[in-house]
Amino acid sequence: MTDYGYFPRATSILRRVHEERAVGLLYGQRALAIGAIMPLNFIGTRRHSNAMDKPFQRLTHTAKAFETIFFGSRGEADRVLAFVHRLHEDVRGTLPEDAGPVVAGTPYSAFDPALMLWTVAVIADSAQAFYELLVGRLDADERDALWQDYVRFGELFGMPRDVAPTSYAEFRAYWTDSLASADVHLTDEARHVGSAILFEIPVPARSQPAMRVHNLIMLGMLPPLVRELYGVRWTAAHAAAFRSVVAGVRASRPLTPSVVRRGGNTRFFDDVARTERRRRARGETIPGALV
Image (cartoon, rainbow, N blue to C red; front, side, top):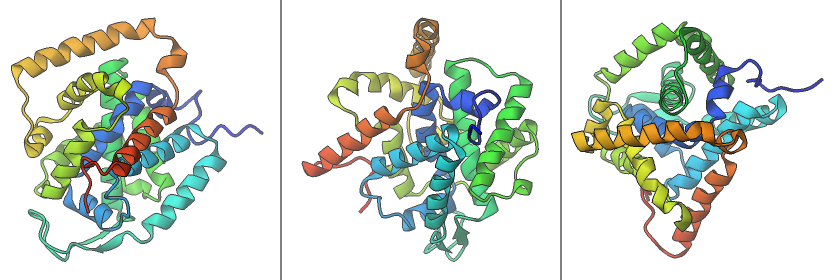
């Protein structure tokens, strides 16, 4: 019997969304940057990572793992999930010091249902945002189906279904409440790492001209609160340039062959990781690295 994976192409809205290469190249950076405004998520991850001096290799490894789950067979996805589960078993502890409103001693765990939901939420919001910006608007039924796919995605990592909003409308209410939460706080380290992930992706020389467009789109897609926390400006000139760039991207989409605009992004992820490794080998400063 053919193994169509957890998100079959014929039925999964999540797969349709993530197979758009533009979505796959952008959603993860925004998700990580927004996710970092919850201190327990950022600090818990940072304290149990052995790759903070090479943030983009970690980012690309995660991106490739997620694409395996989105697009691969169940066997392929299960191998990734088992590996991640083993890593997550060690991600637990208590906050070593106050992080804004979150006090020292507050416990965290990779298996905390509320933290797992927040991690899924930033992915879901970011992927939908870029799809609707650059590809097309989803209707109400598609949005509900997309959210149910993300709940399934969370469940694969161990998130209990009953912690998740039961509908897209409930997810949106959760999202609004989360951004207004008293727990929102961006530590100095989170700002350092998040800013680099948003705007300083290491790419080969051939890709550097495209980064101005990339950075403008990324800036325009941050919620105003998140832009404020990161200390980045958003002016009328930025907004006008953003609208122009987005219009151009959308206008060019029908002219781009499906084989180019849809599929996995392994080649692009590998370019980023390779560029970071080369910079490290030359002794150059790596944006967002923590030692």
